[in-house]
Structures are given as structure tokens and as C-alpha cells.
Length: 268
Image (spheres, rainbow, N blue to C red):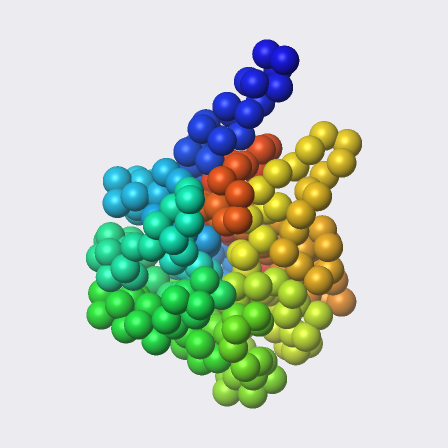
């Protein structure tokens, strides 16, 4: 009984309030040698207004991310929470006003998630862009690192918006280094061949990872396949972060909230 009580306290009151920095490295065969070593800060599923996610926690997220000195920061959607018994809605202007202090030489870019669109996607976009955070919704952006171009392709949320994957990627010049950003990883099988890397969130890593069982609930039509971490498939790489906030049930067990520092290397 004490063990069960202890696990309950941990999963409801302790682990959801943690914040870890996770370091990951990807080696991509087609990644240009001159761009090897770029470091990306990856944040997703903040869900401001959910358990333990208030303005103080937002400032902590910003501070810890900046302390990693990423070259680029990407935000992968679901900044909003709905009104529920364990959380409340916070205006996107509040979240954006804190996240504006994120710092990276190549800038801060974002996509929107299903919760943002269920609230009001256009209002979320206006709030973030008013603070200098560019939103990419089926849009591309060129950045330069070491005087070499990298293209970001922001692909809209699968559950709530039209999918224009091919058309969006077609805006990028042939032979370019491309990083695709989206909220829901289930678009991964539809990624054009010329896009080597997709970054996503949405799954929360399943929130609960039971010994010998795994993650019983993952919001994906592919089950646990794209739950968390690095996935290599058909010549592409997918990285899914387990994010920071919670959804549906206010628990995390063996899936702590995370800020990710992702390093992309070339094997050339």
C-alpha cells in the first residue's frame, strides 16, 4: 500500500513538476559536412495553465534553454491548455511575453498544435509574432549557419489543419539542407524524400511508461511507434520530444518534462 501511495504521489505531484535537459545527437548521412554540429533547442507541449505550468515555470524554461546556448530554438506547438478540473486557460499573450526572452543566434521559430487551433490558432499566431517569434504554418524560412543556408519547413498540425506537405517543401531550392517542424509526428510517413529530418511533439512521450508494459496510451494512429526519441525510417529521421506539460490526465511516470538540446552531425 505504501508503495502504491508513493508511486501515486510521484506521478501526480513530483514528476510532472520536474524539468530535465536532455541531450540528443543525430547523425544524418545526407547532412552537409559544413553544417555538422548545429545545436537546436527543442520545446513542445508547454500547455500553460496546466499543472505546474505558470509564469514562474515559463521563466525557468526560458532560463534553462538559454543556458544550453543553442544555435537555433524551435517550438513545436500546444502552448494552450483548456479549462478543466486540473488546469485553466491562459491567454497566448501571457506565454508569448515570457518566451520572447528565448535567445539563439539563428532565432526562434514555431509551429502551432491542435490545442492552439482548438482555442484560436490565428490569435496564438498574432501573440507569438508580436513578440518576435515567427510561426511557420505550411511555410518555409531560410536561416544561415556558418554562412551556409538551412531551410526550415513548418508543416501544419495533422488533426486540425489542411496538409500541404509537398507544396510547402517545393518552395525550397533543390539540394538544400532541410529541417521540417510539425506538431504531430503522424505525418512522418508522408515526408518527401528530400527532407532528411522531422522534429515533432504532441505525444508527451505517452506520459506514463510502465515497466515491462511500455506506454499504454499514445495519441497516434501508429500506436507506440512514434512515441518518443529518434526513429529512423525510409531514409528519414524523426525526433519526437516528450514535451513539458500534460494533457487529459495530470500524471507523468518515467517520462519527465524535458527541454531537448539536439545536435545534428554529418557522417561525411
